[in-house]
Amino acid sequence: MRSLLARLAVLSAFAVSLSACSNGNGTTLPFAGPPNNAGGTSGTVQTGSNGQGLIRFIQGSPDYTNVDVCIDQQSLGVTAPTVGYGKASGLFAIAGGLSHTIAVYPSLGATAGAQCATAPGPYFGTAAIKTGTLTIGTSARWSVVLGGTTAAKTIGFYIFNDPTFAIAPAGALTVSHNAAPNYSVLSSNANKSVGFGYVATTGGPVTTLTGAGSVAPAKITSSAATSVTNAPVSSALPVVPPASFVDGNGVTSGALVTVGTTAAPGASAAGQPYVVQLYAIDAAAGGLGIVAVLDQVLGYGF
Image (cartoon, rainbow, N blue to C red; front, side):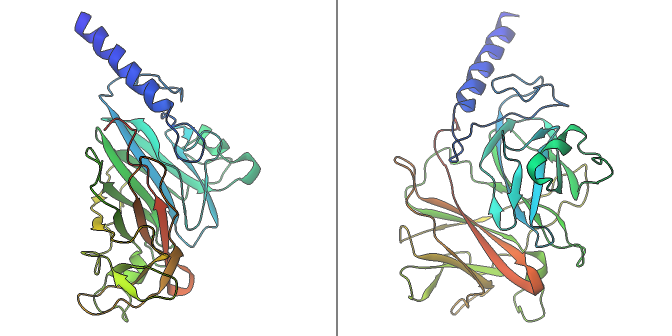
């Protein structure tokens, strides 16, 4: 009994320390609520949990301008569950070693997050766009992308098991995710993949990121009961920060031709390595977009 109480005390202290961390946007890291009995209260130990998991949500489907995201029956985000197309949420902590339900709805705007009270079911007759089960492990970091389109029958969750950075990277790093199922299979895309690169200075040439010239599309999580996890590609980044990041048709040799482009995030916070998560996403009319997120690597306890 004494060892059990000691373990719960340690878990409680760890949870409180996590709840004090910032996600980079000035909000604290929330815990998931029911059905795992945390009640959405930061610092509460969830029965059966043996660690923490970190997730980031990316809205990568051009079908929707904004979506509201619920984890179990709590909003993803303390006050702002809405994520716009081509945007990413902060990095949030949930109890690891347990299954969690994710439900994504068309945004309600001023009353965003109200859907979570009935998630994953309909909210006053409006069904979720997609629901799923996150079978996240202990001390794991996941990217969850709502990707694809309804017309192409590819809309769904594309889930990636990201590096946990137990040891800080020695230098700047990019982590590339191909969450663009429609663009990846175009007949004009010979390698049926997406390549990632960067432009060191404005107007300069594109340099393909090492190992990320031809990244295969992620597999969809098609069942609400099973998570299918994919592996992103990590690449060293010689220029910090570059002017921009780009993506385009996958190449096994030769230059990468730019299709999507985005300005590179600025310098990382003091003490944080420069690590950027890159996401290729489908754009309207068969196009390709790219999302770049400056990651927080240190300060999460694993």
